[in-house]
Image (cartoon, rainbow, N blue to C red; front, side, top):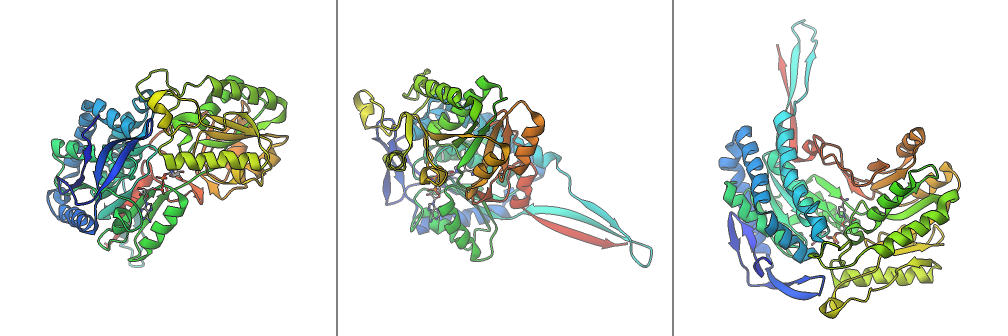
Length: 486
Ligand code: NAD
């Protein structure tokens, strides 16, 4: 386990404060560390350091050198892979088999993909006719937006943080990161890596704390922060958007979801079951892209529900170190209580519990952990709150459908619009349904298959803007047109 004192990282130095909050591990809910909460003074210092760094060596650095440093970051994260893995699993309780496959490698890869992108991207150029016959040339240039405030959630801490810090730095910005209060470790550890590879002081800063009246609010309301990028709940995103209105600052918001999977009778049955099990229960259901609503064509409904039940019941619930663990705990007691309250609500709303619905019986000190069984419901009306609201746990509802039209209407009848997974061997139908789904990301015969060059983001209340590949340039750079009269 990494050091039990987790500090802010400001201007290349680790900084304690007079105020501490608890860091608990969700497998046992035991106290494993103390985190230094940043107050207004520390947030001011971090923003000032980030602003100063824009004018220092970082601001003057040639693109080639910047790219070299980002590539060195990847190598150094991989070099310290096990430390990152320990830190992430201590904070989240997720299986090491998952974090070593997704969280840490992707956390590193996010620097590589955006280093490659900025190295290769071209800007637009237009020739223009003028009445004197001599013409004019237009070309666009991109410059950094400045200091970017990065507000992160707890479900994939390193991965989702570097998904923003990667493009921000690749484009020449500086950042102040506010990790989730639940998962402060990997963001803090990354400070050491920044120093080791020679990223100039002040380019990467981390302030710990909560939202309201804490580091989150101090950062998002800070007038010297030029842009705000956020991943988290829609409700929080709306608060951040209001804060960003002061000073007309741009926001990029990656928010909640209530994603639907659509399973047609002509699907590859085994692949659809495997993919849906993963999308419902991976990371204990705490994936924004995860499936909480499953619609299955009636001919295969009973068989599909039975296969999902068998798959869920075979899943081993356990600790990060056990290679057999398929599912870890939820992030906190508070979140466990929230998910369990939805389990009770499902019963009140008339659900049939196919499997799960409660807390698994865990041995010894694990009894105190934040566990919830993988849970499958059927039989709820489409108006049920359990069908409408994001739960963000290892739960899904499975409903039958009879026609493409019907399933599209049901799947789209939600305020969120993040992602979908469509399972069918009829590619014409797959295309038709994907086009009509009101989402930012549609998978066909897969789930969570991510090419980092593609646009990522949500429709409706799931987000504003797209990040990924060249789309990240829209947010992390200021585009300027230069028009030259010949
Ligand atoms: P959250 O909104 O509770 O917290 C996210 C971050 O915002 C935390 O760092 C928190 O401290 C901070 N925050 C809270 N209130 C704030 C305020 N008033 N001002 C400034 N900062 C504030 O979200 P969470 O519980 O950490 O994460 C789960 C949510 O994230 C789910 O809704 C999930 O769908 C969403 N999510 C979305 C994506 C995506 O890409 N769309 C990815 C992962 C998670």
